[in-house]
Length: 146
Image (cartoon, rainbow, N blue to C red):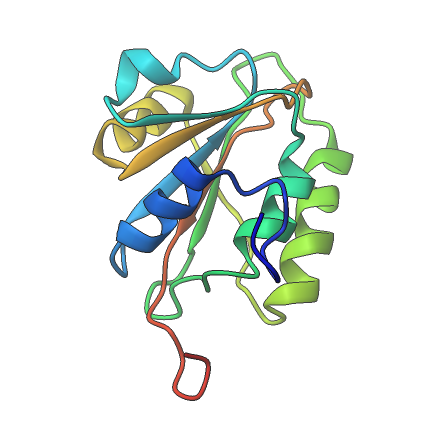
């Protein structure tokens, strides 16, 4: 354990967050997501829900302020619906840590998979809500925050 680092942040996840450059993306994937199918750098966070991981991660990195939408979630498939409480629970954490973050971009399922292939890493979580995946784009550390 390290002082000031949330216990949901494993050593492997800490290493990934450290090595990511600005503009790199990390996919926080729900427990059902085919992470290993789409990316060779997969970190496990089994049993940990995404809001708790967002708390820990967003204490260590900021979101990219140079792009219109530094957050992306999967759009509902035709005939399916989204539970608005999922995004609401994520936004509560995001807005607490980084107020003023733009709205979440909704990405079609197969486009989301393509984006996952290009992501720096996939974090496999214990999240079980439908359409619970979210992509974070890492930003440049603001002056005075280092």
